[in-house]
Each structure stands twice: as C-alpha cells, then as structure tokens.
Amino acid sequence: MPELPEVEAVCRELRRQVLGAEIARSRVFRRSGVRPATPALLARRTRGRTITAVDRRGKNIFLHLSGGTVLRVHLRMTGDLRVVGDARLRPAATRVSFELNDGRSLIFEDPRALGVLDVLSLPEAATMMAALGPEPLGEEFTAGSFVMSAQRSRKPAKLFLMDQSHVAGLGNIYAAEALFRARVHPARPMNRVFRSKLVALHAAIVEVLREAVEAVCEGADDFPRQVYGREDQPCFRCGARIRRMPQGGRSTYFCPHCQKGSA
DNA sequence: AGTCACCTGATT
DNA sequence: AATCAGGTGACT
Image 1 (cartoon, rainbow, N blue to C red):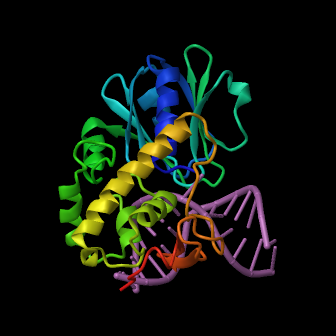
Image 2: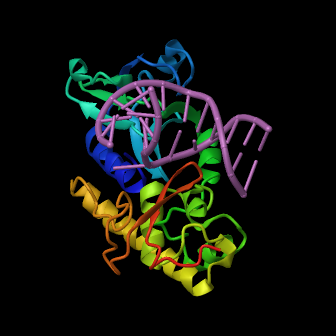
C-alpha cells in the first residue's frame, strides 16, 4: 500500500509507540530481503538496543538504535511495520518480529515478501539517504531545484516523478495524481515540459502529498483520486474518459483531454 | 532507455 | 487460467 503518505503514517505511529523501547529478541520467519542474512547476526546487531529515533526518507523508514546502528525498512508493495501487544498476536505474514522489553512486539509484516529490512551502520545509512532526491515536503524541494533537475532529463514525466533520485516518495498513485493536477501528459519528456508547467507540477506534488498525508494520518482509508484506478470513468474536470496506458511495465492513468501533449 | 525478476494474493 | 497489484534494482 505504501507511498510517502502511508509510510509517514507508519512512522508517526511508531514514534508514538516504540521510542525508548528496547529490543529484547528478534525472530526471522522469512529470510529473503533481510540483512544481515542470518537470524543470529540480525539478533546480535539489534538485541539490547534502544530505539532512539524514527525517521522517514522517501519511502524508507529508519529506526535509529542506541550504539550507532540503524534498522532500515522499505515496505515496497505490501509491507507493514507495526506494534502488537503480544508476540502471539503476530499476523501470519510476519517476516521479522522484534520482541520489546515491555512484552510488546514490533512486527515487519509482508505477505508478498518484496519488502526489505536491513541493519546499517551510520555511514551506510547516510549513503543510502544521499542517493535519494529531496523530500517533497521538505525545504530543499523548491520549484527552482525541481525545474533544474527536470530540464536535465528526457524521461517520460511520470517515470521521472517515480524515480526516487529526483524526488523521494512518489509512487504510481501520487505521481499520476500530481500530473493530472498540473495537466501534464505522463509520457511527455520531462525536458520538454514548459517551465510554467514544471512550476505547476512542483506545486501539485507538494499539494497532493500534503493532502494525502493529512488524510492518511487522520485514518481516512482512501484518499480521493482523480485519475488513478478510474479507467473509463469520466474526468471530474472535463468529463472525458480517463485512460490507462502501460508505462515502465505498470499502469498509468490520465485524462487525455486535460493532459495533452504526449510528445 | 526499456524489460524483467523478485513474490503472493485478489480479482476477472 | 490469466491478469493485475500503490516498488525497485538488475539486467539487456
């Protein structure tokens, strides 16, 4: 489920729940995507450590542990990271669990098993963060910097937005929604989008993510979408049929009337 | 720059 | 049975 807003909601909940808690024991139920690769090594690097901070960068969750290590989790498509009151309440799709010293458990759940959990040193965490583009809801993400990076890329607009090195945190849904709001065609090469459109797109990204973070963190289950998942339904703005087209092996939804100029 | 592989479950 | 899924890295 998670793009930036959903990951942000997970982080806020974790901050409420696990700051200051100590990891007493870890258990690995599915090893793929987990590092260190052996349960014994994972245990060695986490046991007895306290969770001192919860950070989000793009769609990555960083749990800072005492002693200078970082537990990093990427939920990918179907992951979730949450606390259960008791180890016996662990869901069937649990991949890794961390029992806390107060009896609760921190659960990394992921039925599709595409998610990633690893233990990093501080320098490794820093390297990983440095590879990501600016936080769209942070100060560094200015219209100017966005326009500059956009003009250096010939990528189709939607693929550009989903490339985490340009902006961190957009996925298939919010990329499509931002493009619709700014009326940019998803296939338009990024360096051929007019500057005024790029400025509008920058604003649309910030706006759609702000709204979604607020909605998702309030517990609203689904954020109202204008295009995503609405193939063949009428555009809310002009009434034209929303279309779906493949891009980079996945579905892009857009309004062919509002978002013109594919080439 | 485009396609595929990683996995499993829900839906048609 | 086939297709689709809100992600990403590793291939050609």
